[in-house]
Image (cartoon, one colour):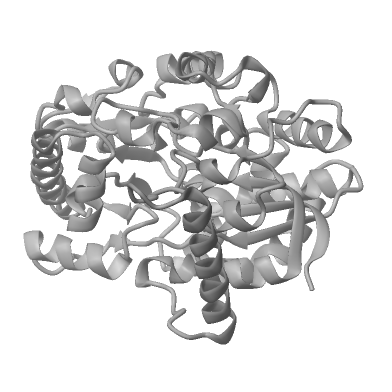
Length: 438
């Protein structure tokens, strides 16, 4: 029997989202609110059976089909969008822009910047349905939050690294080189042209191969520990296979590690290198030296507004020189830009917790309850909406039964660790309680 609960947080990628979700859970529970955290793609059977939330926090909400099973069954709840992707480039903006009746009319949105607020307003989202919070991931590099993360000594012991060597951390973001065909087809369906998709995939593949050549040579030429971290959606074994197909067997001190968060590695490392990844923004805010690898000129389809503030390596010797420099330069221009654009409103985490509590206390007006039409997508022409909604609703029960019984509910390889991470929520929250002031 489903029981009432104040808030359910849905998460997709544990390494990206769980720290923020657990901090907010601790803050909101101190306000007397009840909070559960569940994996959106694997725990829905349990969640729908056990919870009847007043408010649901989504990791993203781009279109009516996002998290559709929850929208069907929890339609009367207030939905809030954390919007974990707000850095756009021309090649992904169409796919990542909220559209459709449900995201634009029935959801509250958190915005990291005034630019994103303006985007929401231009799309038709009423100003009262968006909160300017700042970027919560960047807040974790500030005190008291940063004291939560493992030290360099702990990371070295856990992963066989020499703490006396210089650590070069490479959170890669060659996502287009790793998307499968179904993802590429979805990108086209969501508004990107086939030519754009093909060009970005080709660029990412060639850039990845060149960067791996550089990394292998760097480990041979210098006495460093190189930590290549695949993006959360890429299985480490798949990354190792792709790297070794290009470079041959990995030399010692070339590590491919996905354990721990980007934040822990950034705080512990001496130099952070990447492609066009927003991890470079995080490293700049953390006060770490950064370098963008650009063996191929970045096409306009992948250029973002902050890229001109980042030092670049367009040839291998520039990378080697940056690694060997006795005092690598911190990217102060990028850090200042991030502080002004993404952290100008104070503590984003406190702002988010305050906004969610105000919603539940009735101090902020929620959006109108979603209609059946807004959460029922894909209705064929000529089929009555009510009949289609009933069919979708029935299928959600069937899906829930399969999830609870274990029939065909084995997590895909790329989300196994995300699903398993739910078991660590209590431990994480206890650790966060000890780090946060009362």
